[in-house]
Length: 188
Length: 159
Image (tube, rainbow over all chains, first blue to last red):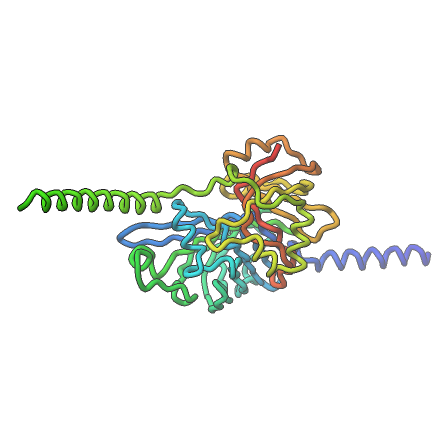
């Protein structure tokens, strides 16, 4: 009899534990695409990066992106050299950019249910060692086990100490560039 | 105008035009300069995935100075390691994670659309050697709460 009640209570404890376990564990993504796009009347320039890593904590809404800066690829080799160089992003000194934020409305996003949700992200973006606050919107798409995040926002280069006062870049690179983010997450 | 003056003028004009042509040609070349072909370059270093990860975890600053270049054309590496994971990125390029089970991080090697075909038969658990360009090092990131892998791109199998 004692054995049975012990078994029963153990079973109850296990069931209760399971009931309170969130349906989705920590989300990790190494399948990402980040694009820079700069438009001026002189030319359009874009760069693509497929090597960033991101995590989302479903309970707190914490979201992090780590971006290896030398992985940005441009059509023209010279532009890529300039981008990496000391006067621009200085990627040898600052090999990674980082976004660290919170999805403020995570409670309204059901990661266990298929659908498209709008996410409000607030946090900090660090580029070239300079950290600035950001507040952007994104979309979270849940389809089965696949969770995707998409967002497009603008950043002002001068905010991060990236300024061009003279020469070709001053006229050919926009002061504000558009950043497009796309990431596919897997639950850990 | 004397004959001598005419001759000087003529030489001057030829020099000016050839100077312009060379100058213009250089500008055009610089502007359209092709990307470095990583696979045609001979490797700067040949090592195992484990060695590279250890170097970065022990002293990231020193490793960055050793491997990264100011203009983004960083060191070309020949890396040997065990395939721990095979995936594909958003650009349709194959990504092989070379990591030993005893290591905290590995080396993520992205192939190109062209070289991905050369590695189509590679299986998880196999030991392979690749050549590619390093983009960033391995480290523990406290915000991600995980170890980040070394990133190597433009990779191909070394036979």
